[in-house]
Amino acid sequence: MQLLLDTHALIWWLLDDRRLSKKASVAIADEGNTTFVSAASAWEIATKYRIGKLPSVSSLVADIGGAIASEGFAALPVDVRHGQLAGALPAAHGDPFDRMLMAQALLENLLLVSNETLFDGFGVHRYW
Image (tube, rainbow, N blue to C red):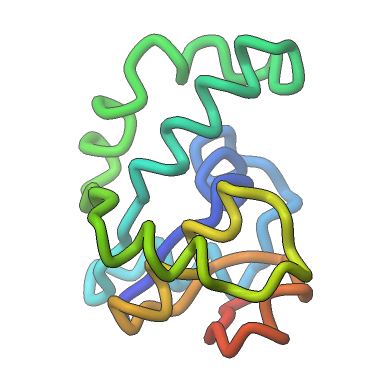
């Protein structure tokens, strides 16, 4: 399987948080799967830490790329196609980070590891 971690799934994996579903944990741990982390998640983590919404990620913010690499995850850059689709998605979801993750999952044919049921209405294949 090819997985794209939603930002909360990435954080919960890195912090060994029990809110990450067992099914998601098993899939992420499976070395036969490829796990991607979007540049949008690095942007979201840094932004939300800066404004005080994610105080628990202070150690992660210092080296998000290193944390991703140490887990064997693949970085997924944002490209023009991703931006175009993220902007064109229906207005029912206003979070720019989520919109980018949905666009990337759709265009790259990735399973989006997320507990966000709202994604289901956008044609995203969600894994939780």
